[in-house]
Structure formats: structure tokens, C-alpha cells
Length: 430
Image 1 (cartoon, rainbow, N blue to C red):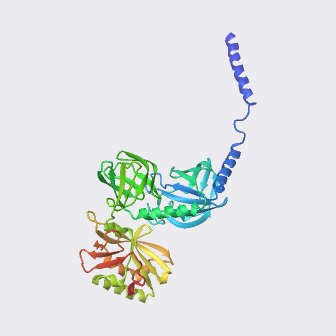
Image 2 (image 1 turned 135 degrees about the horizontal axis):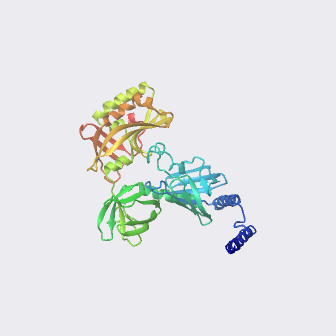
Image 3 (image 1 turned 90 degrees about the vertical axis):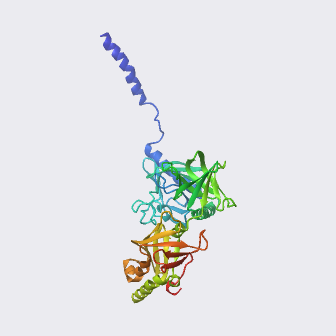
């Protein structure tokens, strides 16, 4: 009996405590739904209250192998946002919203080339990344923080932290131009060496705004954005013992003719090198014309002219090289009404800096006016024949970023093409 009463004596206070809890205040003053509504309203308010806009430090892909970029956003209403970036000087307005999931989510739900460029398939973004996934970028972001001094986001796909900082005055326009100019200047470099504090020099592997120590295939990929005056990294970088999160650019001088990037202590230098002429050829778009073709090629151009004329097709411009990330031949037809490209492989010959092999890849892209295979078989194919599976040596008077190059077929010396960065209109008559 004593045991029963002891048990009852223990249970009774617990029951009393439990019943009392029902009378205590609630932990939250508002329901979960009310709190979510308030959080979404706060995001809208923060984004729009700064009428000058925001600068977004954007990194596509969870592994960040495509580098980082800067997007400028101006939220003009609860539904409309204007975007531009360091690689796109267009200002494009589209829709956006802040929606409810497990927390507020900022979604750029109206197609906007400025930001959706990073999430489009490779087939649509110019061949960057895989045909189906492209650069694997986000256009929907979990909002981790939204205050007047910063908005911190997390990419829903990538998981990358994306920080937005407030702009002031006319910085949406002026800073965008500064970043665009910095990106254009940096894009002129394609080869880099690493110089450590002891003056030892080793090559760096560079691709899409990332560096990697070429001497260590297992070294971490260092991802950065191009900013005015230097490079800013996603996280602290460690390169041969030097730790840094930003590198500043030093202008060219006698010792460094293309300048260099270094940390605050000059403990490491990333030094741009003269781009090999075959890489310079591949990375640019070159204009062609009949009068700059050698004896072998002229016969094919004559055949092309006859076929195109018979099919009532006018060729206004003809190019070879890289266009929108694709190595290709580009055709402007019918006085600009029809534009398209057909992909071609331009392979750098290993062990050389002046040789390429060119061959037809064959993917067709309509850039306007319904360009398709019918134009190819109506005479454009003859223009490609003297390039097909041929290896060329490239020469130029100026080895550093020449505006004109000469391609000479290694197997057929009369198969030559002089190409120009400047446009040549009416290629059959120039």
C-alpha cells in the first residue's frame, strides 16, 4: 500500500505541472503563417527600399567550376526587376517574386537572359558546360537574411552563398560599366604563370575564372570574380602557402609587360602571359573574303558563289573562330535577314603554339531568319571543304593579339587564308 501511495504522490505533481502549462503564454506571439507572411513582406520591402539597386556576387554550380560573376539588380516593384551584369551590358526587365517554401525564396521567375544565361542548357548559352545542364546556375534563392546593409541568399540548386550589397546614387549604371570594362580587360588574358615569394615560376591551369596549380592535379580549384582593379575569390584561397581572398592588379612595366595580380604582401603573383597565337586564333572570330584566299581555296569559293547565286542566296559576311562560346563558321545572309552558324572543331596541336586542325562538327544554330541545313547544302558547304580535316600553321606580323593572321595548310602550301578581326562585307567581292 505504501508503494501505491508513493507512486500517486509522484504522479500527481507531474499532472499538475502539465495542466498548468496550458495556462502559460505561447512561445510566439504570431502563428507560423503570420510569421512567414511578415518575412516575405520584409524581403520585398528591403529589396525595393534601396531604389539605387543591389550588386549580387553570383557563383553558378555547386563546384563553382565556371567561376564567379557580378549581377546588378534594381527591384522596381513587387513584380518587376531590372538586371545587368559584368558580362552583359544590356539592361533587361522581367518579373520576380518572393514565395513561401520552408522560408522566403527569391525567384527570378520571368525569363531574363542576364541571370538565366547561367542556368540555360549548354546548347542555349553558347556551349558553356554540358549540352543539357550548362553552367548549373541558380535563379531561385533561399533568403537567409534581408536587411538594409546586405541580403544573403543560398542557391537552391548549388547551395552557394550569394551576397547582395546595396548600391547608392547612380552606381547601378556606373559600377556596372566599371565591372564590364574590367571583364573585357581580363578576357584578353588566357595563359597565366604563378610566381611565388622566392621568385620561382610555375604554370597555372586557367579556365572560366578559375585557377588551379598545374603542378598538383589534386589542388583545390580557386574560383573568383573579376572586379575593377583585380580579382575577388569566393573564399580564402591557398596557393603554395600564400593565403588571400583578393588580388590587386599592377599595371604593365618592363619586367612584367602584361602586368600581374598579387596579394597585399606580394607573397604570390599571378602573371598573365602572351597568348599563343593558335589559342588567340581559336578564341576570336575572324572575317574571310575571296581576295584573301589562296589558289586552292579559290576554286571552292568559285563553286560556292555559283551555287549560292543559283539558289538566290546572298552571302554578306563569313567568319571562322569562336562565337558565343562555340567554335564555328558563322554566316550572315540575305542582307542580314538570315544569320546562323555551323560548329567546327578547332583543335590546338599539342606541343605547338602556332598550329590548329580544323574539321566540321556539324551542329547547326539558327541565329535569326530560319537558318538551317538548306542554306548549307545550297553552297555554303563548298566554302568549308578546303578546311575539312586540315592542319594549318598560323603566322602574324604581331605575335601579341594580332588583328590579322595567315593560315597555311601544312600539307598543301597553296591552301592559305588571310583572316581579319575587322569585318569584311561582301566577301565574294573583297
